[in-house]
Length: 373
Image (cartoon, rainbow, N blue to C red; front, side, top):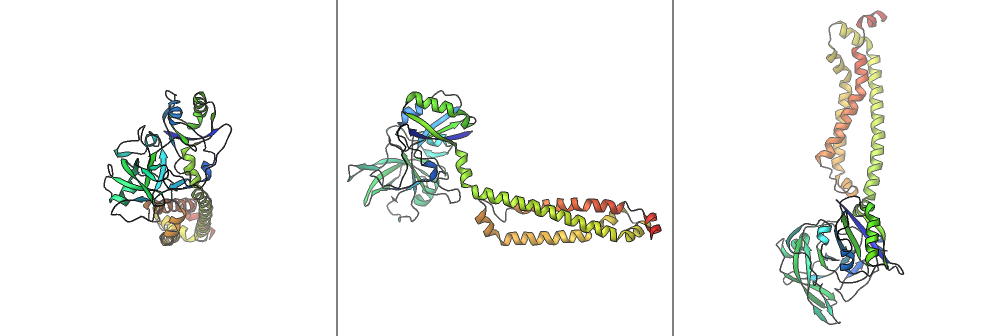
């Protein structure tokens, strides 16, 4: 399954998101570079209905911006008997079908329906109630992890004005702003007809291959609209993981260089040791020493170096665990795989380096060696 994000634009105008405050839920919007061209006055029924029956398109919905696009909107939520949280929830306006499109599981309650509205102001002083859907982090923060469906909270509209919001749905956590931050309390509110909307399309194949079909479907319904900057949702994740991917590539390069140098060094040391001990090995084999005994004698020193180096590496890795975790996303220094994989690779490299000298040692002819001496 794939998801595509389509930023929309009216032919004669490009609007850019900016820091603003409106009378529709007091909030602070922060615009990231990925949504600078996502500006279109578009009506939900027209945009979503245009894709009914389109081959390859499974689900379609709208949102203020895509998740992980480095855009966010925060607002204050007040709940009787609960102190005001220093970490204010994120908000996102979405259309019906958003959670199905983004594959965000629903725990309880319902999705938005036509007719649902967000908490808002009627004029400048009269708060009007609205509906909202919250995630698990919101329930943990404000309701001690209990099911919040059917409960009401107050959402700050502007300064000292707050409007009630009934929680009609309860969904799984999903990363909103940054993959590196812990799961944040999030409130999803119904989308009103406005500018700056993003079209989300869930496809059964390559989303970019359906771009011409998506463009044609939108233009048939609204000729004054066109799609720009169609991106797979996975691109937003890749952009956020750029630092980790760069560090991983550099680390892999230097690790390969170090491993090659270690193999060459071990091979050189063992090969020199076999050459120097050629007479000793010949005498031992003449006295009846088996091949396994000869190999063990040759590789004993190398095994000691391997065990010592592995121990130093493991201790060093565990000691620098916090530094490693700060550089690499979701990587723990104590992860068994992260510890076992390098040791196994080093063991394989050591065996590879020791194999040619060991074969050379067991092929020594005792008679020829003693005769030459």
